[in-house]
Image (cartoon, rainbow, N blue to C red; front, side, top):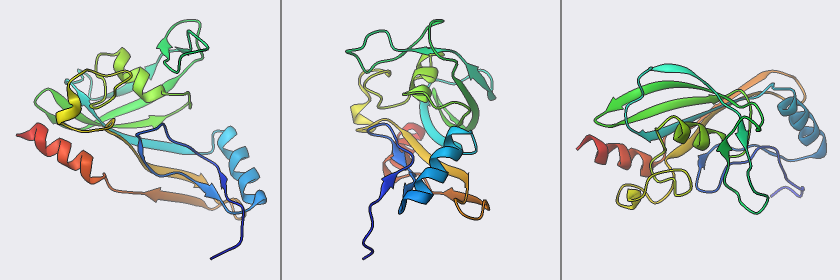
Length: 177
């Protein structure tokens, strides 16, 4: 019921679920945008990926490049911007895993490109993934589950978390069968 102009602070790729931040005033938007630019935010995701990753935790440090101005697709290429994603396997299944991912940088499609480039694309990802996932899930199995950032006025650290959505829980149940 408030009369205010809301401003988007963070965003998600289409078909990614989870937390975003929306500022209710210009001061908050400016402070949050500045803090995000200064790497004061921590964004963590959960994804269900194809295959089993050899290392149960690590860092993917590969440059991401946009090869064509007319395409939304990105690739790992030495001409690209440095892109860093930390990963940790949360749970392993037969030929799939639930993986926690934390962004050190925030490139377009970063998690999706990185996971695909190491041979573990996200279930349901129609741009970087495998075909035939429609029977498992109707979107990419990527969920922004945790955001940590300083409060725009007090600088107190705010931690927001949300559970996996039902479609990803259902996907995991299908994989377990």
